[in-house]
Amino acid sequence: MDQQEAKIKWNKIEPIKKAADKQVSTISTNNPDPREISKRKKQVKLHNGLEKKMNAIILKAFNLYQQMCATALRAEWDDIFAKHCFMIGWMDDYKDKPSDKFRGQSWTTLAKCKRLHLLTVCDQDTAQQYTNYMNVTLKKPQRLAVKPFYTCVKELGDLAPSLPCLKDQEDCPP
Image 1 (cartoon, rainbow, N blue to C red):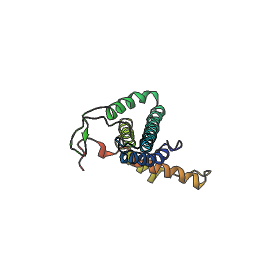
Image 2 (image 1 turned 180 degrees about the vertical axis):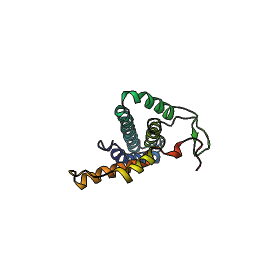
Image 3 (image 1 turned 180 degrees about the horizontal axis):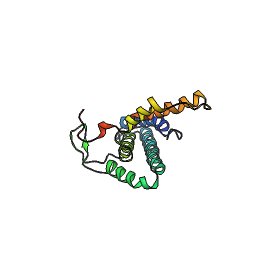
Image 4 (image 1 turned 90 degrees about the horizontal axis):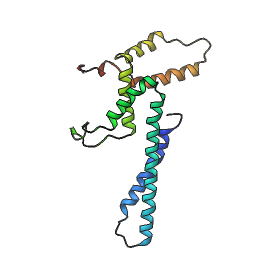
């Protein structure tokens, strides 16, 4: 997704959509001025078009993750995706009660779905194994330059917080 710059595209579209939404809210639907009505229609059209683009980017991100999974793992991903994004009754953190709406597809739900999927695929102590590997086992190959080795290690290090660890087990003390 980083190569396709999905998040970057999303971040460029979001402020434009917010500005269009603000313009729409400032112009009354009962305004008799034809220029204001025309301006409002253009802003609504812009807002709807940008919202479609944003939804397409999110959908593409979810589809890309699914396609990157092996066929054996896709069924698990589809179950997690359906339960997490399109199930009513999840606990709303803000209201402390079950929600009556879908979570839908967003960057936060994608991250949560990816995390839940990792929990089904990886061992419970993967983060500890990773730390041990990085501290004890990892060694730079002789023929590899420092910069590419550093880039790979940095990329692995950035992914480390998403790895399952012992805190993800049920009934684990704080």
